[in-house]
Image 1: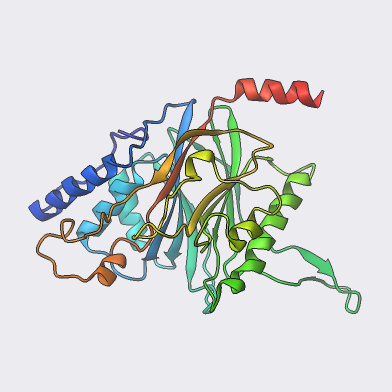
Image 2 (image 1 turned 90 degrees about the vertical axis):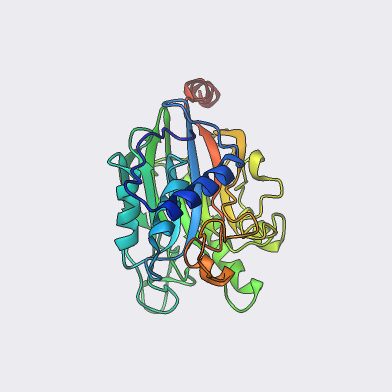
Length: 325
């Protein structure tokens, strides 16, 4: 069982939900997620769960979402809405070791009443205190003397600090605007690259190990959007450089996991997506006549993207000390 496992509390469920869970578990197995080991490795994921909290989930959907999330130790969730009822149900199924840290929501149409959240198994990873929305870089306006942002995100990235084994790190989760054209996303992506670049140069910044995750709305690795966000050195782990499409058709790489390899080589060779859809949804909801579109509002139109982190980095820390000395 990937992650630590053993704490799922599905409780009393109907025969139909049980059948759907068996189908889902077989699809999860095909992702070949390796088990994580305390103080050695950590399985992380990022998942845009469509309108999570706005569109009421069926009982089956709540159990399926919990089953998927429980495969990992730390999951960044995008598109969590203002209503946290369904998240609470999922955490109950995951069990008492699972905790959540989440952002506030914006009420304008650009913010879409969305939050971002981290859910994590505290046996594997510890939240170390930093949780904040990211402010865009500011410059002083000579005319007014005020510090102003020249450009900002529609939805502010959300950062939180964690520790697992010897590895202290900060995760930043984003949900880049869709816009009327791909060009509308470039400024937000460049702003992300600039923000990371500035932070790692700060002497008092909590940690140089920043992992950037979320829904970047980047169709293809290597295109102009990907080049914008990686212009200051961010890079996908080698395990995710292949054709891991994160939409249901698996032909678009909207979701990303990025890091700065000059600070750490913390990823193993394991990573990919969890294809809970597998080109049909009826097996998960036997007897239900929902359409594919309706299905995306029960599960999602995104697949979880995951990677495994090495958290036993004592040797790497020693090498860094020698190099800096």
